[in-house]
Image (cartoon, rainbow, N blue to C red; front, side, top):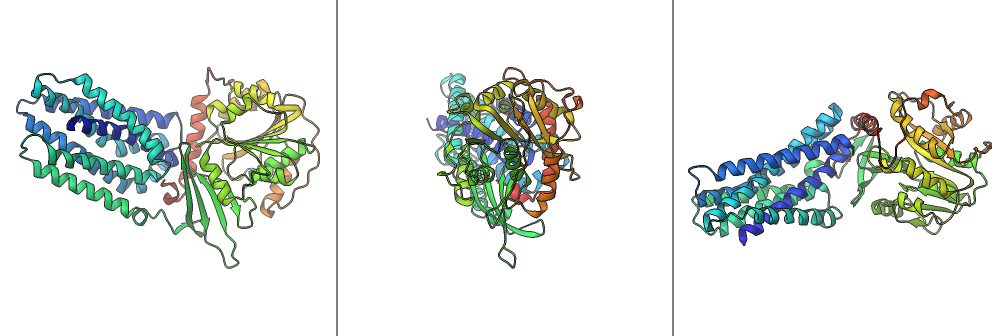
Length: 528
């Protein structure tokens, strides 16, 4: 029973590591087809090598039950040492890897985090089969792998609901290392046979356990994640972190200047989603662009809807105009951050805590304006840019209602944006496209106003408290929508729930954007 319990726990560690690795890597490498290809392929290769290696050890001519037990006890302890070593180096090498190549860097990152621990822990399965076979003539391989797999299920659940919401991914991985080291200690102390290398097992396990606990204790000091952090000619500190199954939201605050003014960032999974001044006004251009476009086309709006919360700046500005504005947000971390740091007033902007796709399928009313600001990782999730989603969104719009989209375009790769335009036009055929003047980067905010009916004539709009640095750019953009030439739609394919022929193009754009951003972001911001 002891050895079966150990294999159950080691199985949990395998899936816990895989799940945590995906979250550790997201701020550096993003969330895309390429990243998950790396995680899954390295995981499967490591498991295959582990099963093969464990089988070779079990079938060695000089192997005895005692030697198999010794290996069985050493492997989790050695795996823990590799995990601690990974935690010592990855905060300092993942950002350079991502700046070098998001795809190749992600594969290298998977090797650092996963390869050795998964090889060692998976090798324990065939070892236990051999130990059982020598004990009673029946290896019970099916039972061993069943127990290990059920342990993996438990590991996923414990990690998702017991570790991720309450601690950083860095700390959670060190907890996994400590658990594996503890398995080695238990094997060394309670092995049912006399072991020649019992002292080696106990010493290795004790060393790995102490290393994991000391690094866990000194994590802030070692990684510098608590600050101070130099960035943009200022000193910054991580004010708070909010974790959920959808990612990690960090609130990062600049130290006040001589006048007491400061800047606060809403930072999620490696990207700055919004910036807010100490007086509560938005630092980000897109906040004012979305409001201005909504008011230009539907200044008479009586009901507005915001899909996606972020820091909640745009919905708050619409509500301040006297427009009842509802918000749809699925991520509890975003809600917690907005309530605590960005003065979210749910009496003025009621919250629907649900998925945007689910909400638009059953809209409780027709809205005059729908702000669509849906991002996760490097872009909008695929299921929120399909024709099916836009069809449901169309039903949420009242007569003459408009949807205003905040999107990103890669000017160096227009084909990826063409897919979005073609798909959107299939359900909301009346479009207007706005982009701020080029800033020198090929990646830029791109705003779309879309409607099922002909767009209303644009009206003059007044805006309060627009920062001076944005005023000229905003008025110039509003005055000159981009002509909707055929070149903008060229090569675009309609994306549906059933078929997404644009997936690789979209992943390529997101990969390019992530690689650009990560090179200018302090590593301490990225560590989660």
